[in-house]
Image (cartoon, rainbow, N blue to C red):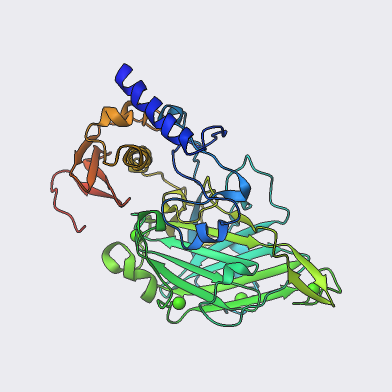
Amino acid sequence: MRRLRRIALFITLVIASAGLASCTWTGPEVSYFPLPGKDLEVLHSESRSLPAARGERRSAPLEATVAGDSFDPPSYVVYRTHAPIEVDGRLEEAGWAAAPYTADFVDIEGRDRPSPRFRTRAKMLWDDEALYVAAWLEEPDVWATFTERDARIYQDNAFEVFIDPDGDTHNYYELEINALETVWDLIIIKPFRDGGPSISAWDIRGLEASVHVDGTLNDPTDTDEGWTVEMALPWAVLKEAAPGRRPPREGEQWRLNFARSQWSADVVDGAYRKKSDTAADWWVWSQQEAVDMHRPERFGYVQFADAAAGQATVPFVEDPDERIKRALRRLYYRQGDYRDAHGRYAEDLAELLAGDASVEGVALEAELRTTPTSYEITAPGGEGTTVHIRHDGKVWTTDRKSPSDDH
Ligand SMILES: [Ca+2]
Ligand SMILES: [Ca+2]
Ligand SMILES: [Ca+2]
Ligand SMILES: [Ca+2]
């Protein structure tokens, strides 16, 4: 234990020497946070040395990471619609009326941050053709500027969807839309912390996306109510990175998150002008614990139900392996910090204080295999599975009886 303390102290000193140690830590995982004023880059083009949110700097020694995991992911059961959805931005279909709203969006850094100024909620439905997404964004000043597909839509006020069908944190989709119905769709091969890249040339062929403005667009002379987004994302595209390369089935769960970028604007000569010296607010369905949407392990859970919306109430069922994945994710972050401090990955789980990595009482019996350039940590999951995580963050499950898998 004394040796572990020394290691932790050493890491503390390394962090302190980087000028980061005087900060308060509120999250469960060690990672580097963005530098002030760089939150756009964090969200959309970052390497692992993340810049910090809103001028804050936070970090912590390994010893401080043994606190409980504050991540309490939201879940949503997606029901079927049997009547067609007309994607016109108006949520007038009976299916939408019967579909529940998600919880209200919260600040991207979590519930300890101030509540969003404006309300945002979303709904989902599905049928054999597509996943349907709807959102309501309260907004007194509806404005937008971008008109070209694959522009950096988040630099306007935008609604964003992130989908990781198999939950491995690699190969996930991002879709953004502004009030002019301009979209940016892309696939992220790996989160930027793990090397990326993202590919904007990837398009959701057959995507339908519409906006209805409850008020007036780009007209500051009145006060608007907000805007609604309605979208159809075809399974023909979403299945590409899905388990079995097929649409989901009853009971299956995908990882998904929603976000909203919200900028401040002035009115100059009768038109909106985005404030250039103010960072955006980011409001999300599933909080990310940092100003970084590219932590797919923190997306929410959606479970697909064959029941039609309004016809039944299907309970969400937590997969016990997900808690093991959360514990392994802590070790992944600790390995990254260990490597930053020592120039190599730890070869012994004790060096990562793995005994403190369990999540909510779930026993973690992890094994670590380290090579000079990589590592993989495994742990038994529930019902005969083994859960894996490796140096580039990919996390997956195999059947313990047949260790071969498709990864
Ligand atoms: Ca509609
Ligand atoms: Ca994936
Ligand atoms: Ca694209
Ligand atoms: Ca207006």
